Amino acid sequence: MTRPTSRDVATAAGVSQATVSLVLGDKWRGRVSERTAALVREAATRLGYRPNLAARNLRLGSTRTALLVVPALTNEFFARVYTGAARIAAEHGFGVVLYPSPDGTGPARDPFASARAALDGVIASSMAAGALDAIGGAGLPLVMLDSDPTAGRAAAHVNLAMADGMRQTAEHLLGLGHRRVLHLASAVDTWTFDIRAEALAALLGPHAELRTTRSTLTVDGARTATERALTAPHDRPTAIVCDDDILAAGACKAARRLGLRIPEDLSVTGFDDLALATAVDPELTTVHLPAERVGEQGMTALLSVLDGTPWTAPDIPVHLVVRDSTGPAPA
Image (cartoon, rainbow, N blue to C red; front, side, top):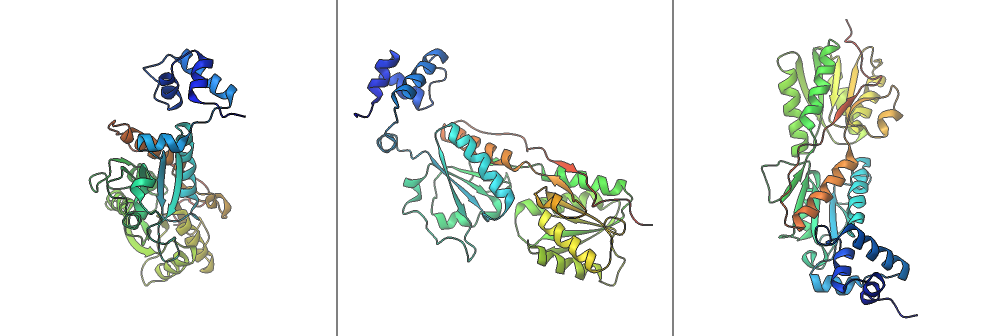
């Protein structure tokens, strides 16, 4: 059977080939009526028409492929970011390729013979910004996620309201009477954790004693760091604010090993609202980050940049989910 062509679709729909190209290339809005676009799509579906992507890409200088750079595929948050980005990409005929940041166990450097030829643009988490050098895609349109909006070469930024998440956490703990707080901070040196630390210090500083200890982003690392902090020769904190739910899980393990009850003796909060937050006992009070929305907005921003349209948006709202890991400060 002969493969149907765009001319066949145009004949079946009673329109020109140029109109078919506009509709199937998703560039018809404002140039073709809704009714005509529907006729073209119906004719293409009925005929089983599939565009010759290789020829179109060669002609347009476009691969309709975006690269999503993340720290690790094992982190649930970034899996959700990918889901959101891929959903928006699919609606516009794009594909999304995942690239975890090389950290000694990740992929080899230079995964593309020519990133410029293989990709239309890049969406990158600030936690994996170092991988951008490995890609060698300088000059590609870049959208940064969860990063300093005043720095870097990114054409657009997509951020969560991290500082507001820490505000909600601080107000919750202060309202429960906590005045000695430990910040279990991520040892990863990146803007997203810096902004959380700054916000927490500004909010708690005038009202409570705030100490900080750092940990690797692992449960075992957090357990060790928390045990060390809780057994140090000073007044024990009544609450621990963690930069991440994984750190919070480690803090809870440390508390149990030391014979402390949560939340009667020690309140613990997290950040992210991963599935882990409801798997631990007691369930974790944590800041919910809408990860899929981050991916959706990241891909939307990249599409706008590729279309030559400036893209700006307010920070994506976050909210505190109060569960059983927090309670009144012990007397």
